[in-house]
Image (cartoon, rainbow, N blue to C red; front, side):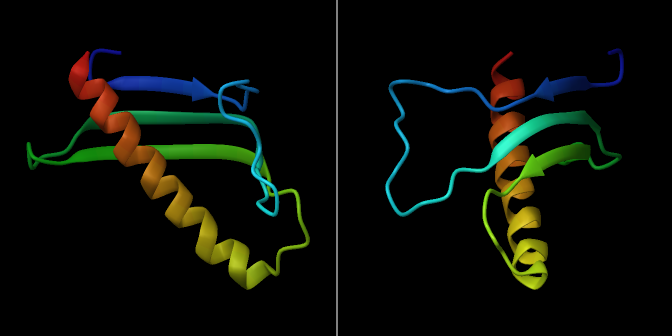
Length: 85
């Protein structure tokens, strides 16, 4: 889009990255993200909406701590890739 990028994503199975025993791999049903320049040119604004199944009986408090961390990692990774475009 003229003022940035819009990205949609979902989980896929990749044979080269097998599941790790004793680790829970979440299922991302669908996610949408909008990346656009911030007034401070060294920063990027990002809006994210996602539907994800954490595949486990995770207490609400823990899920509320984990999801923002996952989103921050995702934003950093995607911002790096967009800079390469």
